[in-house]
Image (cartoon, rainbow, N blue to C red):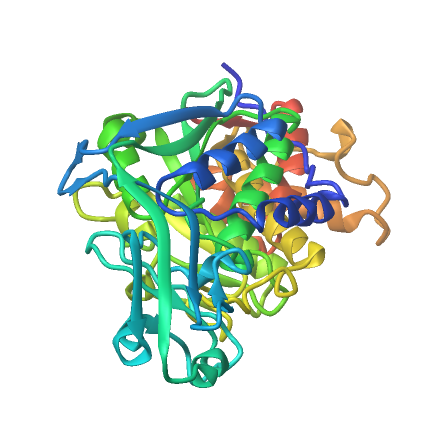
Length: 438
C-alpha cells in the first residue's frame, strides 16, 4: 500500500476558542480519580467525540503493583461556626475538600480542627489542592487569609462523602488509518476546578481529535485516552500493554498546555525516540525559545508510559510545565490563567509534531546522479533568481534520499519544517524520482 504524505493542513483558526469554551463548561465539575465527576466530564467530551468508548474497571482490580481503589463521591462538605455561619463550604469551591476525604460529622474545637486544615502562607489568597487517595483521612483546604481569620471556639465539621466499591472510569477513541502503526495521545481527567493543570489537556485533545478525523491523506492510526492520572495510566497499561508495545510508534502526554507564558518539552526516558525527535523539531520551528526538561523532571503519566518494562515512546509538549508556575495546584489555576490563544498555540504545536510523524519515512532516489528537474516542471528552465528557492530545496531533498536518512533528519539538515517539506517530497514521489522504503 502506498504511504500517502499528509497535506500541510493545521487546525483551523477557531480551535483555541472552541477549546476555551469547552474548558469553561468543564471547569465547575468536581473530578477525582474515580466517581461521578469523571463520568460527567466524559459525557460532555463524548458530545464532540461520538466514537469515545467509556470503560469501567471495578474497584479491587489488580493492575500490576496497584489496585483500583473504592469509588469516591461527595454530596456536601463544610465547616460551620458556633453561630451557624459556614466559614468553609465545598459548594463555593470544590478545592475546599481534600480529595478522597472520608465521612465525618463532628463538633470540635479550633485546636482539634487545625491539623485537618491546609493553606499556603506564601499565597495567602489561594486555596491549595490536596489529595489523600490511599490513606483514609479527611481535611479541608482554605486560603491562609481564611485560616488566620478563624476565631477560637467550637466548629461543626461535616463531610458527606462515600467510599464504596464502584469503578474507575476512562475514555478511549481509536481513529483507524491505512497503517496499524499508532500515534498515542494521553491526557488526564482527575482534578477538580483547575484550568491549566487539568482542563487544558482534555480540551486540546478534543480539538486534536476533531482535526485528525478530518486530516487529508492520513496514514497512521490514532489512539487517544482520557484517564485518571497515575492509577488510570497504570490500569490502562495493565489491560493494553502488549497491543501498545506492538503498535505505538510515537506518543505524547498532553498536560499544562493552555497558558501563554512558555513552551516546554519533557523527553521520554530514552530521550531519542521518534516522539522526542518530532516534539523537538516541531517546537524548534514553532517556539524556538522553548524550555527543555530532563526525564528527571517527570511528574505526569510519562512516569508510567516510559517505565522499565513498558518503555513506550512517549514525550510531552507543554506550555508552562506542571510544578513550575506559582498557581500550580491552587485555586489561582483558574480560567484566567489559560486563554483561547494559549490553547491554540498548544494545539498547533502538537499538530506540527503529528504532521512530522505522519510525513516521516525513508526515501531513496530512483536515478543515477541528479535528475533533470526542469523537464518535469520542477525547476525553472530560465537561469534567473525567481523560483530558485523551491528548486534548490527539491535538489537538496534529493541529495539526502539515500535510503538512510528519514524525512525528519533531512528536515533537520535543511533547517526546514518537515511539514513544509512533505508537499515537495510528494512532488518528487509523483514524478517517480524517489521511492519510499517500506
